[in-house]
Amino acid sequence: MSLAQGPHSLQALKARYGERHRWLLLLSVMLGSMAAVMSSTIMNVAIPDMSQHFTLGQSRVQWVTSGFMVAMTVSMLTTPWLLSRYGYRRVYEVCMWLLLGGGVVGGFANDFPLVMAARVAEGLAAGVVQPIPAIIILRAFAPEEQGRASGLFGMGVVLAPALGPSIGGVLVDVFGWRSIFFMVVPLAMVALWLSRRYVPTSAPGGVQADAGSPGLDWIGLALASVSTLMLLNGLVQLRGDDDTVAVVLLALAGVGMAVFVAWQRHLLQPGRRARRHASRSASGQPPRGPLMNLRVFGHRNFAMGSLVSFTYGIALFGSTYLLPVYMQMGLGLSPSYIGAALLPAGILLAVTIAVVGRLSNRFPPAYWVSWGLAMLALSFALMPLVHPAAGLALLWILVILGRIGLGFILPSLNLGALRGLPKDLIPQASSVIGFVRMLGGAAGVSICAIVLEWRLAAQAASSPLSRGLGLRAFNETFVFLAVITALALLAAWKMGDAGAAPHKE
Image (tube, helix red, strand yellow):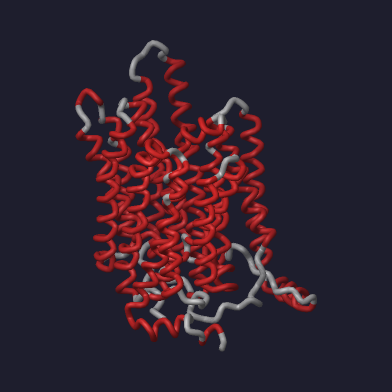
């Protein structure tokens, strides 16, 4: 029996579960995405405890997070190839086993290199999983259902980082850093069980997965990996004393990205592609396709959506790093108080996503994205008005305003960027926009830290005896984030109405 006609093909699962199958499929990948997102956001609370356990410096232990981010960012680009070669079910299950194995191995590890290996494995799995839900939403749901599906999925995924740090802080205090690794295990186990029931063996579009499909672009993957690693390392070095190393690394990252783009353009040229495919077929090797199909940037909505996604990634991840540090160092609040205070805002964010998802069909996605960016920028811009002597009510109002803004953006950005694309480009586009967002996010943390340290040093040099310098430096960093977020509005306005979405299969 062929794969396309097997008991777990898309056609067979639709026949078995009827119209509700698409919602059961969305629930399955949502839990896997929650496991992936939780593993990416919760580790920060365990860094100090882990540093003490392994007697390592903070900068070296920080690679537990940085290594995960690099692996996750780059592996997103492999999702379209993996899905076409092996199908949804096999790819998704392998990713869940990697997350599960990474959690168990990392939790029991007694050597730091083993901890790093577990985190990189988790990062690889998290990166491959994250583009899959957007592909499913655009392919399995009718246009009028896509907003609701995106809102439901976004609500579930946002709850993981909203609840994770608060629960994780308690676990670290009671059981130590190892408990953080084990948090992902139950979610991964449930996701594996659901995948055996509802995730099809088919490739995107419901077609049979093809082991003879174009081979993976290993050269492109190596270029993207090395360039991303040098970019993040260069940004970290900017925070140190050796600016020369930082400049060299950033320059090499820029050259690497330029070579990557040139290589992808080369692979897309029709004449050379035909000759290359003929040559590899004659030698018994499968043909090789580009890792990133640059044709997606020929669609204005996607190109503008990618710009929004990159700047949004900087603002989101940068503020996720900056806000707790500001509350602790600038305002003198305790970590437990910060975790408890941010929890309601995280839950409100999840609720906002669900509501906006249901209402998203009433206006174009660019409308919701623009309003969300405006609220997020405003929440950053008004942070200088917060002062401990005047109470913290304004702080919580601004935090809630920013989270509502995020709730407007999250369910709408992917829909606005991917709608109107040819069906064959949707898997590529979903992985590319995820890569761009994570690249902005990975850079955003370092950029915010660099701006904060620069302003602290500049103000200390100009007014060494002045009080409140730390608070001023934080305020200026928030203004910087407000400007970055406001710039994303220019791209959001140009997204426009993407027109009709792809029809349901």
